[in-house]
Length: 250
Image (tube, rainbow, N blue to C red; front, side, top):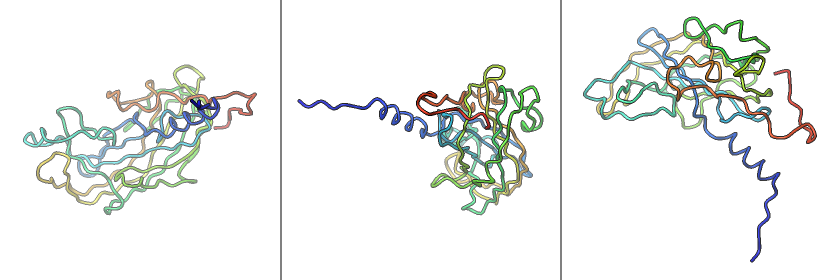
């Protein structure tokens, strides 16, 4: 019987590639005010776990939110947490994706920030990064790669980049990533089917956004653990002897 030999290097490479492209499951959501009702902004790494010096990106997920579903419709609503919905068990919300293909306007910019340690942002909507976090560097990702709608996923927008520093971001000077999202969103009137049953009309609205999302359990503002940003950037597998050296610029 012939045996198949697997090269350890190829196996590790395959596993790393597969892990890096796994759909993100640890995003943070915030409900922000709009001219009518509110919107939900959800942010996190596009691929998780994230590895330093490996292709990745930022997800920006947007939904209009009109609060909890009518009691008669709540029982038939379904959960959509993987897409960044704010609905929780027994408390479904009237929501609809903010979709540029359906006439909505998304004029947002995103910066990646690298700091000494993860700390919760302060201010309205989480707009202020505490100075004690130890700012190291910032880079506006959307200059090089403007937010683009994710294929076949209404309400999800992405900008891609390659994180080049390790984490984990839980201790002093250990390194931590954050994303700042700012700009405006304009939403046309639409119908929501998130509650089940007959569609529910939603008013047009606009929202001005300025929010910082700090990656890691020490940085999230969300009380819902399922919406934490990624807990740590993973050091790149390998060592200097194999020709890899971490970047200390960003």
